[in-house]
Length: 404
Image (cartoon, rainbow, N blue to C red):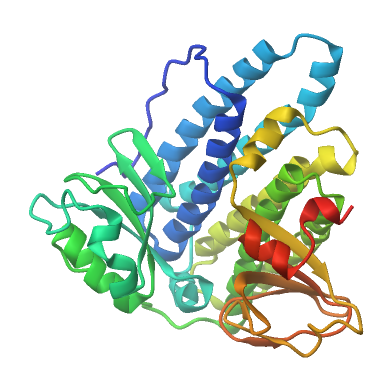
């Protein structure tokens, strides 16, 4: 085990002839996993997950440096430099996301102070995320993820695998499990018990709450979760705005970032009010740190999309990355006469079109409504943010590049 006092050794870096395109895609996937793991570490108060965040943060540093080297090798004239400048901005912003995730993990590792009531937020936050090491005697050793049948049997997904210092992000059905692999499992509590037992040979003990939530403290925690969800959506939209050169998606990132700023101030207010009702107010320091780190993730998302808002040309390397992506983000404004008016979104699925996943609605008078569990009816003037395959998205609405 790494914690406590986890220190990840630095990795010597030298130039390698690897494409910027591959590095951009890998950095994007790493950034998204970093946010996932960092928040899971906080919500679960799990030092092992926090240590994995620091491992990924160190890996991100290597990816960023290699990408910078490749960009320097690629710039041969002023035109190249002009078109590659936004890519450098993306690298810097992605590194800022990595640093913020590391700061979130440090809240757990350095015992900055977190109320036990954070665990009470688990059911409303996200599906639980658990770290499990594949046991020598696991029945799943040498099986592919498709052969394990974990998804259909338990509802649990393996979202990443670490094999030594090698990371397998977004493992596919043909990815094979080996003894000693560190897996990251996401799914419902009921399914995690079975999946964790099969993979590790040990039972999974879900987090418990040892103290009741205090009203103001509960409000602070709820607001932080709202910040978390919006920052994740902002990062997703930011990368999509760049990949599809969409000013409209980039403008949605700015809208989200402004709301995240407002929520940060709200967290500070509720935390200070809660301090009067807890025996040890220093246990609340972590909430302030968490809100600050989350706000920085929102800022980084804006930085990623800045080149699009400034109408800088997209470099061909980004276009190549798009060509390999089958999943796209789409933004659909709902007019008063649209057939989508009155349609219902249930658990992220729009009844009128089940082939795409609705992530959020932006409503003029209510701001952002992030879609998770529950039911929302589409209204005139809503803006729908959805994700799906290219084919499904084109059938559902115009592609981002056609919305200019």
